[in-house]
Image 1 (cartoon, rainbow, N blue to C red):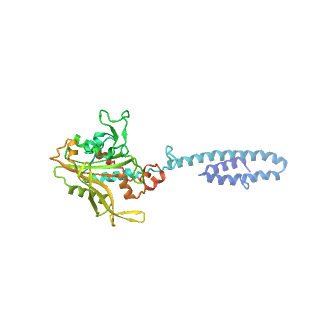
Image 2 (cartoon, rainbow, N blue to C red):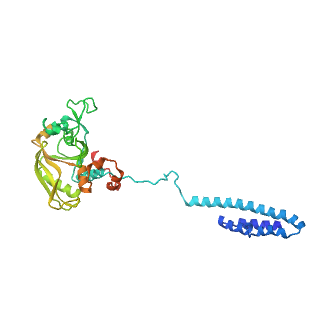
Image 3 (cartoon, rainbow, N blue to C red):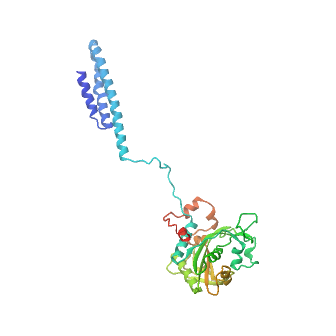
Length: 362
C-alpha cells in the first residue's frame, strides 16, 4: 500500500464533505471501529517484525494526519453552518426573554372613556377643576346653605388651615364632595352658552359596600337661552340607551330636592333581578342611577351668568356605580384594593388608545 497515494485520496475524500454529518460518515468509514485505517492498524499484528517496524510508523502517521484533517474540516463546516443560520435567522438580543404580561384597563378608566365618548357625540366637551376646593365653590356658589348637613365634618373632609390648599382663599378648603364646582368655574371663565361634562375624583366620609371615601363622579351641564326639562330628559335617555347598549329604555323621573337645581329629579332605570344578577332595561323594579334638574338661578348668578337670559340643566352620576351596574361588580370597595386577580377578571384589554378624554379637555 502506497501511503502517500492513500494519504492524498483520503484527504480529498474529507474535502468533499458538504456538512458536518457528511464528514462524520467519512470519519467513521476511516477511523471507526470497522474503518479502513483501523483495519490497517490491526493488520500490523499479523506482519513479520521487520515489516511491522516499517509499516507501523507510516500507518500511525496516516492516522494522525487524517485526525488533524477531520478536526480542521469539522471546524470549518461548523462555522459555515453557523454563518448560514445567522443569515437565515434573526434574534433580537435586546428583547427581554421573560414572558410579557399585557396590562389591563381598570373598569373606572374604561367606563369614564365610554361616558365621555357618548356625551361627545351629543355635543359635550370635557372640563376639569381642582380636587381641593374652597368652601365657597364647593357649597356657597352651588346654593348650599351654611346649615346644610353636607357641610358637616362627618360628611365632608375639611383641610386644616396649615395644610397645602388653594392659595388666597379666605373660606375653608375641602376635598370636593362632587364635581359640581367645575360648572361654576367653567361659566365664570367662559360664560354661556355651554355644554360640558366634568369627570373626576370626589371625596365623602362614607365607607360600605356601595360607598367609598374617594370615588368617581361625572357632572353634566348645558346652558342656553331655550333649554328646558324636556332637553334634559332626551339627553339622559339617549345616554342610557348608548351606555347600556339597548334600543329602548324606561327611565322614571321622580321629583326630588337638590339645592343647586330647581326643579330637581332623581332618575331611576327599569330593571329586574335574576338570581344575584341585575338585568337593566326590563322587569318590574326600579333603581336610582343619577340626580338631575334645571340649574338654580342662584348658581347662574354666582357664576356671573344672567339668569334672566340663560337657563339650563345639570346632572350628576357616579362612574363607579355605573361600572357596577353594567359589568356586575358586587362590591365598590374592590375597585381600590389593588387585587390583580380582581383586575384580571374585570379589567379590559387595551383595544384602543383614542385618548378621547385628553382631546376633549385640551
